[in-house]
Length: 523
Ligand code: FAD
Image (tube, rainbow, N blue to C red; front, side, top):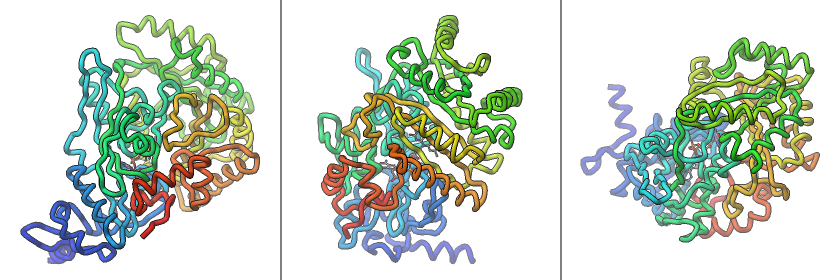
């Protein structure tokens, strides 16, 4: 009986359909809209699931969650809000894998994009003689895009490290990974988008058609519209990957080799993927004794290297070379020739042979290990920065050899360079403004294992940002978070005027993706 009463308090029966009871903060008429009323949920179970994100740093429940079946359902909701006397926030949520409340909608409606995934909206075009592409729904996981394209022997060219992210979610940021040095970020590999603007209009856009919306939406942090389809470039997929990590104790050698590997000079004979990691010295003593990549023996050798060289950290270049079975011999020769040109610590090469899918989906294994250890669903005060090449050694001195010298925060630190000319500055995504060809992505991917850790890691992040400001180092946030509009104006710099103008054009009531707190509601 108690369960029945509880259920009744969430739902009322109208016109033969189960309908949610109107939420106090939303116009009652919304719950009478024929097409979407039955797809809105206001029960506490549903709103609670949409009230936090991967970061677990912010909590705010929406008034309702929309489970759209088609893009038209989303357009209907947005049109209703935009034309209402008191417009309410509408926020698309992919996997909620952001970490500062970007996908939350207090006082409004979260659109659970994944509800459309059942429509399997992934269509590959591989006509002979034409460049292949895939049309993927904004709600699709990259893991599912991979599965569908591989059936045709094809795959997108650029990947994020983790594949359980949505197409719309990463394209709203940039989508970076170890292939970006060669092909640019994921946003540079898109031909066409379907976008529902903040007035509820469904628009197809590309470089030639409605181009201002196309460029605005790519890296647009969900500010200009909801991406419901993206046409993404494909290439022939390799079968196998040689995956290596090379250890360095000298940052100057590490960055020199990374920059060589992403240069045109090394490109053809080089890696298909280049990233890098920083492992702080203390973590060899206090951290895990093995990882999905390194065995216990590997880690104890690396610990020996760290203590012998008295370095504050060990740096790894992570590289991958793609090949097919019939080219095994030539991949070995190619690898040997490439490694001969690098300056890693002699003997510190760690190699794995894996399938292409195992390589792309490698973080899945880490996720499983972290889940079983109970440390996946913990707060993640992550900080991602883009730093001009000319300041990366200063950053290392100030942060890894300074602020973090005797620290051992739980988490992973990534550090790898990208070529700026592979980015299109007409898109909303920001890179450092310094007039340099190369910039580094540095990701401080912390896991807070206690409430004290959250505070401490937040202080570390603040100190890093203070150091950047005090030393005049341009540290542009990627997956950015700024608490004030002034912060956002600084973030966008000279692009701010254009961003504000496009916002006024495509989302005049400022109802979309308000979790970023870039624009105040005009209601
Ligand atoms: P959400 O977190 O749900 O949404 C993020 C923002 O995008 C919100 O503002 C939301 O409103 C908006 N949004 C969501 N869907 C749409 C849409 N269809 N149209 C318009 N706006 C939309 N990023 C990288 O670039 N490279 C990496 O290697 C990488 N690795 C990661 C690994 C892990 C374990 C995690 C948790 C994140 C990683 N990310 C990486 C960050 C990731 O790109 C962002 O979190 C991104 O937001 C995707 O997550 P999501 O699909 O869950 O989007």
